[in-house]
Amino acid sequence: MTIAGKWALITGASGGMGMEFAYLLAQRGHNLILAARSVDKLEVAASELRKSGVQVDVEPFDLSVEGAADELVTAVKTKGIEIDVLINNAGQGLYGDFTDQSTQALDRMLHLNMLSVTTLTHAIAAEMAHRGNGHILLVASLTSFMPCPTYAAYAATKAYVRHFGEALHDELAPCNVGVTVLSPGLMDTGFLSTAGQEPSQAMRRTMTSPRLAAKVGIDALFARRQTVVAGSLNNVVAAASRILPKGAQTRIMSHALNG
Image (tube, rainbow, N blue to C red):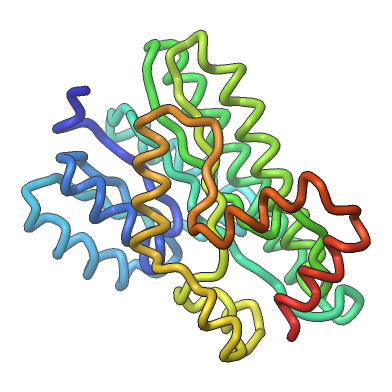
């Protein structure tokens, strides 16, 4: 597959797994559009990535804000760039009792994790289908497989992403557009602290490397797999969700996430 010189759009690209996606795609020769809130972090990353000999465009958008995803699509179209790879990586979690969480914080998370993902995928998938080629990676989560007390709303958003992407894999296959869903588990990316949780030592021992999770996702994307879970232990948990009753699933996830 010839990919050198083609463009990839990565959301949540200023750090963590988003940055790893960027480096892996740059190694393959993809030009990059990096989207995230922090323009300073994006510019630093862009400077490093350009050393790989690829073009890098920076688009500072906060996709948790209404209308931002549409504005990002417009910005890309205005520059005349065709997207060959879309990586919907941007996401946010909220930890704690649901009734203690502010409606404003919940609204922003729901918008970022679901509505912006849907808007970007809709716009770019339509162009890919028209051209007859493209690749889309949606980042879900291991929490998408089971109910997750203290991450109730977040886990529900990731269940949406997983089912959405797995369905699109089938819908868009006749158009030669591959859609893959990546479900990583806990990673040392700062996600937990941003969500409002201090990880325990037990949680730290189960964390997957962001580079490993990103590589699993990229490999699965170009192999046109429907769905993939990063990490051997995480694959066991995902498989268990198919056979355990919901009550047991909920207790397992509560213990894993809250000690």
